Length: 109
Image (cartoon, one colour):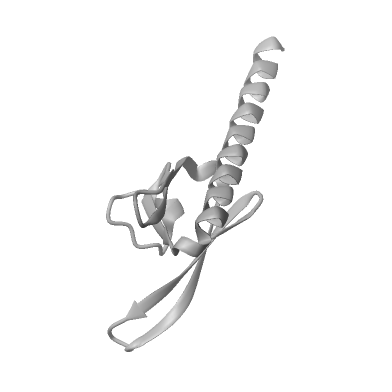
């Protein structure tokens, strides 16, 4: 997973039973489609949960709960995942502020 403003890029391995093969799938969606990002670190695992505003944004990403993407990271990537989570939350906040400012400008006019 990486941040390429104004998009988020998620790469994952997909397994096809029909073709008996693995392939790397890349899905891009705008940061504006993210509702929230939670960084979760129970005992021995590192997980990030990305709640989307719509299923459409998830594209080909398999989701057990509609609109919720669960990403698991190896322990050695815990700090990188935490930093990415912080950057995503900051980007979401910036977009929300920009939206509020534009709404305030339209009200003042």
